[in-house]
Length: 173
Image (tube, rainbow, N blue to C red; front, top):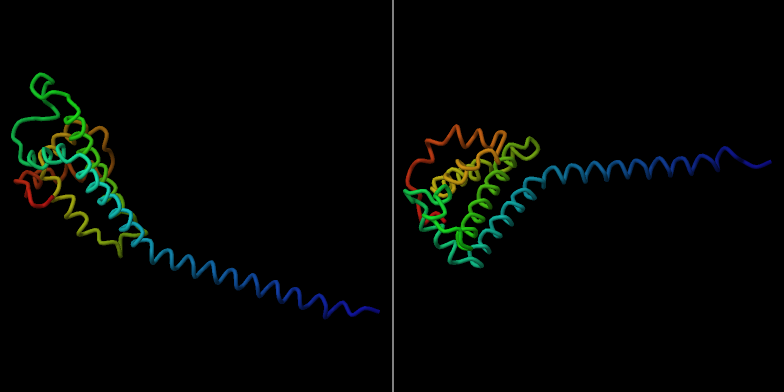
Protein backbone atom coordinates (compact mmCIF):
# COMPACT_ATOMS: atom_id res chain seq x y z
CA UNK A 1 0.00 0.00 0.00
CA UNK A 2 1.51 3.41 -1.01
CA UNK A 3 2.17 6.10 1.57
CA UNK A 4 0.09 8.96 0.09
CA UNK A 5 0.06 11.23 3.13
CA UNK A 6 3.76 12.18 3.20
CA UNK A 7 4.26 12.35 -0.57
CA UNK A 8 1.42 14.86 -1.04
CA UNK A 9 2.56 16.96 1.92
CA UNK A 10 5.93 18.14 0.51
CA UNK A 11 4.69 19.42 -2.85
CA UNK A 12 2.12 21.50 -0.98
CA UNK A 13 4.78 22.89 1.35
CA UNK A 14 7.07 23.76 -1.57
CA UNK A 15 4.18 25.33 -3.46
CA UNK A 16 3.18 27.44 -0.46
CA UNK A 17 6.80 28.46 0.10
CA UNK A 18 7.23 29.47 -3.55
CA UNK A 19 3.98 31.46 -3.44
CA UNK A 20 5.13 33.23 -0.27
CA UNK A 21 8.50 34.06 -1.84
CA UNK A 22 6.75 35.41 -4.95
CA UNK A 23 4.42 37.53 -2.84
CA UNK A 24 7.37 38.89 -0.85
CA UNK A 25 9.29 39.70 -4.07
CA UNK A 26 6.22 41.46 -5.48
CA UNK A 27 5.89 43.50 -2.28
CA UNK A 28 9.57 44.50 -2.31
CA UNK A 29 9.33 45.46 -5.98
CA UNK A 30 6.21 47.52 -5.31
CA UNK A 31 7.85 49.33 -2.38
CA UNK A 32 11.00 50.07 -4.37
CA UNK A 33 9.02 51.36 -7.31
CA UNK A 34 7.06 53.67 -4.99
CA UNK A 35 10.29 55.01 -3.52
CA UNK A 36 12.00 55.40 -6.89
CA UNK A 37 8.96 56.81 -8.69
CA UNK A 38 9.81 60.46 -7.85
CA UNK A 39 13.28 59.89 -9.27
CA UNK A 40 11.69 58.54 -12.43
CA UNK A 41 9.44 61.60 -12.73
CA UNK A 42 12.36 63.95 -12.09
CA UNK A 43 14.41 62.04 -14.64
CA UNK A 44 11.67 62.37 -17.23
CA UNK A 45 11.39 66.09 -16.60
CA UNK A 46 15.16 66.50 -16.84
CA UNK A 47 15.03 64.60 -20.15
CA UNK A 48 12.39 67.05 -21.39
CA UNK A 49 14.56 69.98 -20.34
CA UNK A 50 17.46 68.36 -22.17
CA UNK A 51 15.24 68.14 -25.27
CA UNK A 52 14.51 71.86 -24.96
CA UNK A 53 18.23 72.56 -24.81
CA UNK A 54 18.75 70.47 -27.95
CA UNK A 55 16.04 72.50 -29.69
CA UNK A 56 17.91 75.66 -28.72
CA UNK A 57 21.02 74.31 -30.41
CA UNK A 58 19.22 72.96 -33.44
CA UNK A 59 17.19 76.15 -34.02
CA UNK A 60 19.67 78.67 -32.66
CA UNK A 61 18.34 81.64 -34.64
CA UNK A 62 14.74 81.06 -33.51
CA UNK A 63 15.79 80.44 -29.93
CA UNK A 64 17.94 83.58 -29.95
CA UNK A 65 14.89 85.56 -31.09
CA UNK A 66 12.80 83.85 -28.39
CA UNK A 67 15.30 84.91 -25.69
CA UNK A 68 15.56 88.46 -26.98
CA UNK A 69 11.75 88.76 -27.04
CA UNK A 70 11.45 87.87 -23.35
CA UNK A 71 10.29 91.38 -22.45
CA UNK A 72 8.72 92.29 -25.78
CA UNK A 73 6.03 94.97 -25.53
CA UNK A 74 4.25 94.56 -28.86
CA UNK A 75 2.33 91.41 -29.85
CA UNK A 76 4.08 88.70 -31.79
CA UNK A 77 1.77 85.68 -32.03
CA UNK A 78 -1.37 87.82 -31.94
CA UNK A 79 -0.09 90.27 -34.54
CA UNK A 80 -1.43 90.44 -38.06
CA UNK A 81 0.55 88.56 -40.73
CA UNK A 82 1.40 91.85 -42.46
CA UNK A 83 3.05 93.05 -39.23
CA UNK A 84 4.85 89.80 -38.32
CA UNK A 85 5.49 87.52 -41.27
CA UNK A 86 4.45 83.89 -40.83
CA UNK A 87 7.83 82.62 -41.98
CA UNK A 88 9.67 79.46 -40.85
CA UNK A 89 11.34 81.36 -38.00
CA UNK A 90 7.89 82.46 -36.73
CA UNK A 91 6.74 78.82 -36.74
CA UNK A 92 9.92 77.71 -34.97
CA UNK A 93 9.54 80.35 -32.26
CA UNK A 94 5.91 79.34 -31.84
CA UNK A 95 6.89 75.67 -31.56
CA UNK A 96 9.50 76.53 -28.91
CA UNK A 97 6.88 78.45 -26.94
CA UNK A 98 4.33 75.62 -27.23
CA UNK A 99 6.96 73.11 -26.14
CA UNK A 100 7.73 75.27 -23.10
CA UNK A 101 4.05 75.56 -22.13
CA UNK A 102 3.50 71.83 -22.59
CA UNK A 103 6.58 71.17 -20.45
CA UNK A 104 5.21 73.46 -17.74
CA UNK A 105 1.91 71.61 -17.80
CA UNK A 106 3.76 68.31 -17.44
CA UNK A 107 5.71 69.69 -14.46
CA UNK A 108 2.54 71.02 -12.89
CA UNK A 109 0.68 67.74 -13.25
CA UNK A 110 3.65 65.79 -11.87
CA UNK A 111 3.84 68.09 -8.86
CA UNK A 112 0.15 67.48 -8.10
CA UNK A 113 0.25 63.69 -8.44
CA UNK A 114 -0.38 62.17 -5.01
CA UNK A 115 2.04 59.29 -5.52
CA UNK A 116 5.05 61.55 -6.08
CA UNK A 117 4.13 64.81 -4.40
CA UNK A 118 5.73 64.18 -0.99
CA UNK A 119 9.25 63.41 -2.17
CA UNK A 120 9.16 65.10 -5.56
CA UNK A 121 10.85 68.52 -5.50
CA UNK A 122 7.67 70.26 -6.58
CA UNK A 123 8.55 73.56 -4.91
CA UNK A 124 11.60 74.12 -7.12
CA UNK A 125 9.81 72.91 -10.23
CA UNK A 126 6.90 75.28 -9.56
CA UNK A 127 9.36 78.14 -9.02
CA UNK A 128 10.84 77.18 -12.39
CA UNK A 129 7.41 77.55 -14.02
CA UNK A 130 6.77 80.87 -12.27
CA UNK A 131 10.14 82.26 -13.34
CA UNK A 132 9.76 81.14 -16.94
CA UNK A 133 6.16 82.37 -17.26
CA UNK A 134 7.46 85.94 -17.01
CA UNK A 135 8.41 85.55 -20.68
CA UNK A 136 6.08 87.74 -22.73
CA UNK A 137 5.85 85.35 -25.68
CA UNK A 138 4.79 82.50 -23.40
CA UNK A 139 2.18 84.74 -21.80
CA UNK A 140 0.93 85.88 -25.19
CA UNK A 141 0.68 82.36 -26.59
CA UNK A 142 -1.08 81.05 -23.48
CA UNK A 143 -3.49 83.98 -23.54
CA UNK A 144 -4.20 83.43 -27.22
CA UNK A 145 -4.61 79.66 -26.96
CA UNK A 146 -5.76 79.23 -23.36
CA UNK A 147 -8.53 76.88 -24.51
CA UNK A 148 -5.78 74.36 -25.32
CA UNK A 149 -4.85 74.30 -21.63
CA UNK A 150 -7.58 73.19 -19.28
CA UNK A 151 -7.95 72.01 -15.76
CA UNK A 152 -5.78 72.87 -12.81
CA UNK A 153 -2.79 74.00 -14.88
CA UNK A 154 -4.79 76.68 -16.72
CA UNK A 155 -6.45 77.70 -13.46
CA UNK A 156 -3.04 77.98 -11.78
CA UNK A 157 -1.67 80.23 -14.53
CA UNK A 158 -4.76 82.43 -14.61
CA UNK A 159 -4.86 82.71 -10.81
CA UNK A 160 -1.18 83.72 -10.65
CA UNK A 161 -1.16 85.83 -13.83
CA UNK A 162 -0.35 89.07 -11.98
CA UNK A 163 2.79 87.46 -10.49
CA UNK A 164 4.13 86.86 -13.99
CA UNK A 165 3.83 90.53 -14.95
CA UNK A 166 7.36 91.41 -13.95
CA UNK A 167 10.37 91.68 -16.24
CA UNK A 168 11.83 88.40 -17.36
CA UNK A 169 15.40 87.70 -16.37
CA UNK A 170 17.20 87.05 -19.68
CA UNK A 171 19.92 85.14 -17.85
CA UNK A 172 17.32 82.73 -16.48
CA UNK A 173 17.25 80.93 -19.80
